[in-house]
Length: 112
Image 1 (spheres, rainbow, N blue to C red):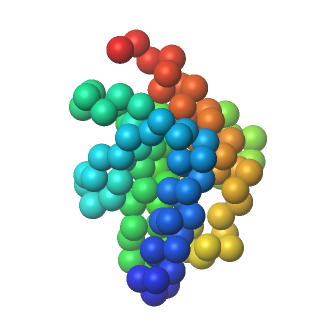
Image 2 (image 1 turned 30 degrees about the horizontal axis):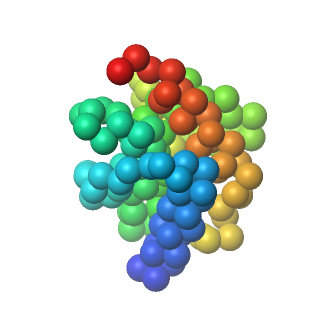
């Protein structure tokens, strides 16, 4: 994967997030970008995009709480789950959109 591919994947994921959640705030952190509806809260993010050498990761803060009928989520952590994208063509927009909608729903249900 070339850096250009990473940029294209990151831009595509960012565009999908902004389409689903136009009111989103971005926080640069951990070498990537966190997306939040609660920018004043330390742990208010619902997802993040993180570029790695071989892929770009879309991580969900409360991934274990998400409905995932497509079986796209990976990971074994206590809360977080992610989807890795090695190519632009590998982004299934409908799957990503469904996961984002779930993540926002879970985030909004959390007490402030």
